[in-house]
Length: 105
Image (cartoon, rainbow, N blue to C red):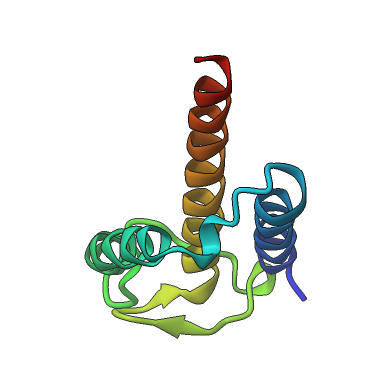
């Protein structure tokens, strides 16, 4: 397993653990999370696909550092894991701050 793949798995697990056990917001169980993720991935497919297309890549990945699996216009599958972790953490922190603001009112 390449370093990039290992980091993605670690970040996804950490983000989900943060959501479920630390912030306890459970955003991954909400429709808002899944809608946000789909919106993010829709734009990511276009941009990441353009940046990493095999015919003339702008960003070149070291083949030994990731799984080698590519989807949607040659995007490394790991890129979508990082997006998932980012959305989980962003929404969890946002929701946690909102809850704390409500407690202070």
